[in-house]
Image 1 (tube, rainbow, N blue to C red):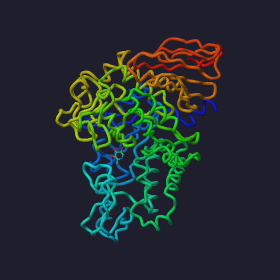
Image 2: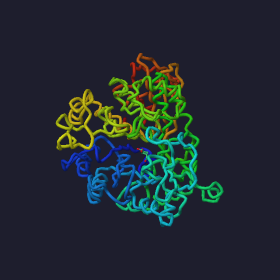
Image 3: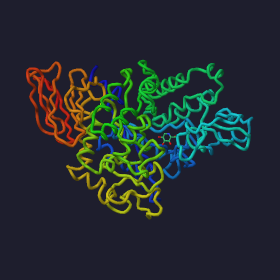
Length: 559
Ligand code: NOJ
């Protein structure tokens, strides 16, 4: 393994940044963010250290699910710009050293997509089999819906032909039938189109639902090719068309099932998967001030191919789902970070951003992001996390965390010059409003969260052992401390994080090390000697964090 491999398998040491064009920057003053606005902010993102942008859906939409209900897989929502504006953004991002991936939402279309309009109109439509239909009344599927506040069945009766169609999400999002070869071809063709415009891959939405054959007769399903074959085909297709494009999959399943979506140790399906289990365990650990659940989740990750990668995250654009915790564990997290029912959603998650959940405590917020960037994997940020934005609980559902980016302390937080009433979504007000939380102020403050994030990103990029290395939890006596190391080739990084409020002294013994090694702090100045037995005592403040590189005498590595 050579350092140059990090550019070959670029995704293993990437820093991914998710944003929605419509809430990022409005350049034409209509109250809605646009591609021109995003283009103006690419230098900001490059300076932050982002290496890969993930654009949330920007396609024409019926807007029932904030763009995840698409009416044209080849289009650009005219409110956001044109194909030309899209290409300008991709080109300029590439020039600034950033790749671009986009949301691929092909589990379903909008019910206003021309395919569905045609399919719904007649059983003889050439598009009828693009969707999943049943003629007999469906059983009770209320436990299978994704949006239990709005739906109580995954089947919707369609008057026009007197049959029911499958929809995992809202009834306005009929599921596509990927057992139909024509649908598979259409999906690949749409992917090919966007790849031609310079993308480096896709964030694949709702992958387990996409592959499911529910609604297909069991005997028939058994005759169909393995749905995972479809993922293998798409991975091969992206590879052929781009050489280095990736599929970053949304697969919120237990670890053993996630392994299948990587294509096991062959690694020929999804390139990266979000570590939902790690994320949920992180919150349980934070709630308990006990690193145990997180350490267990990390060590329980299944073995994957060297090309595959875990995508780590603290928050995303959806609810903070806690669905994989036990009921009692979820209640603990609710009690700690979202006790008010208004903060909760779908009975399984929290519609909050991190800083308000931690009562704005800067020590804890920084400790969590230090932890995120030190975990084995590729970190993914959601816009606004880098400045510590909060949520707006007055907005419906998940929109609470999808408010406009806060650029300045000026009107509309600098997001738009349109009158406030015309904004696509209101800007957060109160303690987390732009008067207190904005990019402009934090850019010029070396002590700001933004400056700290830049440091974390720089160090993460300088430590490829985090993306590539072998991970180990280091034994030490404090339940509230996570001490771990990542080792790759001759590089070893040790990280210690204190999830508790009390200072701790952490005794560590590093195997294979002796007094010819020392520990160099990477987030602050300082060096700690190791004893002949490779031992050191590390001091940690309450909610303290340290990254330490193991340096051997004579090492040529720059610190
Ligand atoms: C997952 C997306 O993250 C979410 O926002 C969306 O509602 C569903 N998939 C349906 O596309």
